[in-house]
Amino acid sequence: AGAPAPASSGAGGTIVYSTCSISVAENEEVVDYALRSRNVRLVPTGLPFGVPGFTAFREMRFHPSLSKTMRVYPHTHNMDGFFVAKFEKFDKSDEEKQAQAKQSAKAKAKARAKAGKGKAKKVGARAAAKKRKRAGTAAAAAAAPAPAAPA
Image (spheres, rainbow, N blue to C red):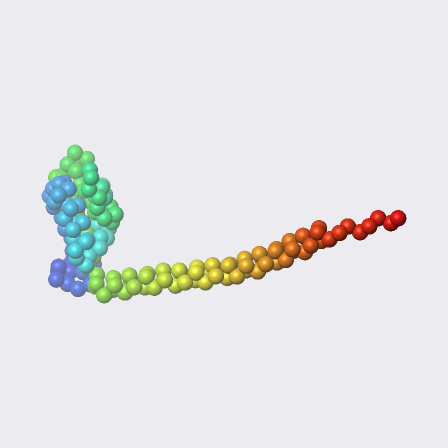
């Protein structure tokens, strides 16, 4: 697979953030900040051991993708405690294109739904007119004088 790309690399580069700590402030908070402020996303670490990082801790809530990070505990894994996060860099223009495509798809779906509702209203209006006409015919028939009985 080759050596990891340097941090200055463009889209597609890999950055591994690792600490010899199990502190939330040094791990999940730092990674959450990077996700919010840099053009990076988390990818699975590939480690065959450890437990997923926190997506919530006490009153703090972190990005859901932090479940892709790994925590290693001394008392569970019989080694020093540490934390690993593997980032993949992306080009902001790619992310913007994806967001625009998603918005465009939502707008098209909304327009289709609106058009469908318009058809439903027209069909509903026709059905209501027919019902009124039938009701009017039935009411007129009921209001008509009954034929006289033969004498």
